[in-house]
Image (cartoon, rainbow over all chains, first blue to last red; front, side):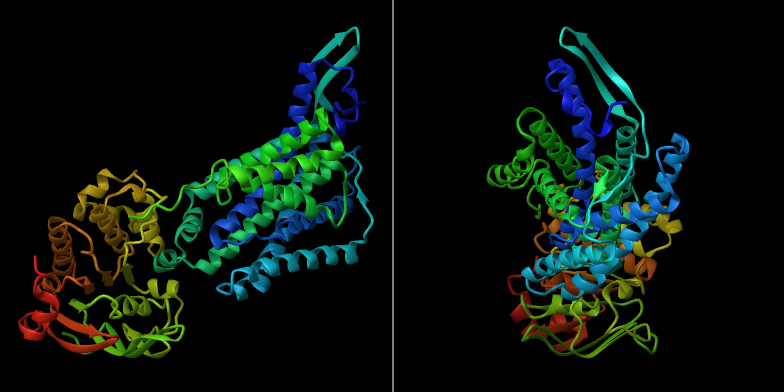
Length: 328
Length: 242
């Protein structure tokens, strides 16, 4: 059976151009949806309190660790049937979201809220501090070694197949990629509806646009900010589980690189914009994947961060950034 | 007039950092009244409005609403007691539709009232009904002012705080807004506390008025009394009447 986690990676020389491209597209969308989920947390928090929550990447890491612990506790392996695996993973997902939410809530309550209204750099410095605290906490409590996970969902589908003189090349989408993409996209849709249609989402947007007026309308601003952190953390935990399933290894440091990339995605999409975060995540995931596929895998991070530099220079408000505040 | 005032502000002092904006302000608003506070730019009128709502909180003094001390309550709790404000600068949520702005206004009420309240504010400002799906930021100044008042009314307030509803508006629109205020007061018994620079209109509309100078109340009386005072005429009315 083909190693699904690295679909197509070894077949560069064999495959037709089109098939190779499609395969990378599948991989890129999978990765992009993970970045998008993390980026939402950055963008929401920035929108409402105007700070970059640098501990957000580490909440994602905590989510991945919780997921690994629960998977191990449940004794999930590849031999568990597909249906049962998916049900169990949804349970893992929920537990991981809840635990990460508690972390996200606590970080805001303990480290950020007391500094609200303080000088501008204070929350930034504390956020970096919280990031280090979370990393060290996980390093000490879980060990510094890389933690592997055996593939749980196996099997997949062949999307395209090409046989020619050079051999055979099949475009594969693994069941796990399908699981990642379906769960991510459903959550993004649900989340977008939550923000657009529900009273909670309205309160969230009101606080984002004018905190004082939101309070004057009877909205509990502190409560709404806490909820924003909780929602962001829950989505980061989803990304954590997806990352764990996709790469099969995690350690206490994964939050840093993934966090910086998701932050790049949020800036690329236009920080503060929800659809921007999803789009930005997708673009970063695709750039990284295609760069690895066509140029060099060593420089994939350079490609992603070069993108950040270019965006900041030429498009500081991002792809879907908000126009300047309209006031009459 | 009932014995206890609906709103009693006593000896309130508010600071912005080290700068004192209110220097011991006392005033009362009784149930069913329209009370206006007039004064020049920077006198502290809007600060008083905001202090009543707890943002910023008064450093000294006391604010009692409906018999309860609200001086130290957080803003959102004060607004849940039946006080609503249409603030200075209107503060419309520009990236939300008119309807969403109204829904935000109704945050503190039982959702069961929403349709009925919506009908009420649309009857008062029919223009908003036409514009209900338009984004707040695209409305004209007068429409935004109507929306700000309508949003406050959606909270079903007992006490409505209006901060300069006439600012920057055409005389025709001002008349429309003032007649809406009068209608709310007469037909629905709404108590209104109105801050205005447009002293002429405000004093004619209000039952009673206060004059604020440099963070202090310097005069008070019925609207008609104040209108007749020569120092008021000189300071606030000459050239200012429409």
